[in-house]
Image (tube, rainbow, N blue to C red; front, side):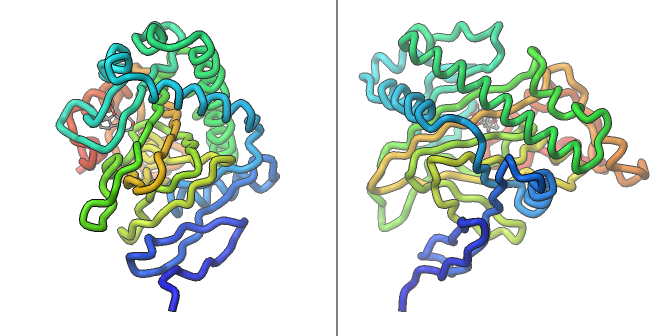
Length: 325
Ligand code: GA4
């Protein structure tokens, strides 16, 4: 008897529970961005999973290959060279340590600010002109994709004005960033995968993730089960962040996710975190909360949320700090 769960196919994709766990296949929603029903599918996926896969996104595969090659070249440099592109906080190269509060993982990474005024980072002094050019083009593409997704959400939820959400990630003050993660292969210890990046939710509005063809990403379902997300290097994955959970008054859930190490292959992922301007006031949208007593969160600025987040550990429940009693 095979331990592998039987695939149930919907839109050609599925999430499997790690075969070592109880087999129970779950479907990962797939959204074709050019489909006229995309906005309805996106809202459904954000409510149900806080997560979906995007196909037909319009980003050229050759460009993605080029970006991936640049990242591989950087991570293959001698450690002493990479260290000169650090420290990771607020932006730069980091290894093993994640955030300022003692979290660790089997990972090395680059964190970059997407704001054009502050792109003068140590990373670009340690990398080539081509690296910088492709990364900058990629950030523009990701900004476009996240705004497109947010416009569809706004349209489906009848949010007025229509650009209310996308504007937050499009203006030049938007506090968005890009993370390039390299998870070197890691032999399993005592037959177990280890943590590459510990469980957490993303603080921003939405995150757009793309990886090479190495598995490792898992999401947590509403019932608390962790499920594998099969890698797909030709697609993107959209992750709902805490800010969008607040603005939709909890209708969308920021999905808990994590990355496990892989014994055979290294994993490379790029995530664009689309965030609002630092001074932006975040609160549930009044059109989604007709009765004030149903409002679940207090108003805060993105800057307040960010500084609160940076005082927490990765796996902490940060939204609790802003819930109404
Ligand atoms: C999680 C999402 C993004 O990777 C990130 C992370 C940030 C960091 O690595 O510096 C944080 C983490 C993330 C949330 C809590 C704080 C801040 C590490 C950490 C312990 C870049 C982000 O915006 O928040």
